[in-house]
Amino acid sequence: MKTDRGVNLTVGPYIAAIDMGSNSFHLLIAQLLGSEWTRCFVAERKVQLAAGSASGELDGAAQIRALNCLAEFKQILQPYGAVPLHIVATASLRGMRNADYFCKQVHSLLGVTPEIVSGEQEAELVYLGVCSGAVNLGVEALVVDIGGGSTEFALGRGARMLRGRSVAVGCLSYLRYFPGGRLDQKNFDAAVGAARIEFDRVVAQLALPAAVNVIGCSGTLVAVEQVLNTRSGRSDGIYRADLQTLILDLRGFDSLDLVNFAGLPADRQSIFGSGLAIVLALFEALNIEMMRVSERGLREGILERCLKA
Image (cartoon, rainbow, N blue to C red; front, side, top):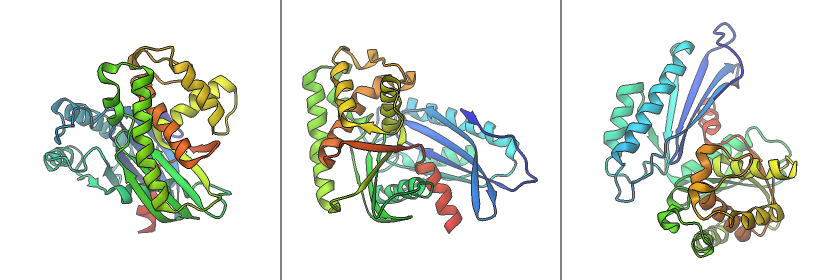
């Protein structure tokens, strides 16, 4: 949880966005200053709404965790007054048979019905959130967001996405390649291979230019960068050589739950192994040696879309 400044309604009105992801929920509160906004408060909570949903329905325990998190967000929002709130749900609710029932519970709690966006819409929001705050993007940029249930690819120029794709590859959903949480070379390679097939297909569909500026965002890539920065002292992105060394060190753990690296948040330990497999597949599919990482993402994209509407 992070607070940048106190509540001051004399400066300008506030606006808020909630990103209900498959693994984590994100809250962003911003203050409007003319046609611009400034971040005032951000919070992230591990919810794992998509856990136990392989049957096509949201798990009951996951729904309780989600509603408890949203109740906490509601308490955080109270000092800001009647804040316009925008809620977006992604792969966590797409295709779930009981999604409508859950959304009604969210509406009863917060007075807002979550918008369940498609994969391409999610990619566009991610691109908007990352690129609206970026500088020196070059001619074209590819933004990649590895989430809990899906990975989004957004190719664009400036502040406009040209083409977007979403694939069902996520650090939470890919736990299925590690039965019983067992972390061994066979399971890791299976996860890398499955993700690589999906990513190769997307890269071909996007018809990427020879030179493209690749920017990563969201929890998985941010966590990988944090660990690598702690190990190397660098803070300018993810390097393939450092990533490969980290993966070699991952072999020292027999179970996903035991994974523990300096700089790795405790709430990401159990999914870090599957996330590393996906990141490796991404680097191989894109054939890149380095990727910059942005702290901005979908939640910022939600606000940018609201202000441009």
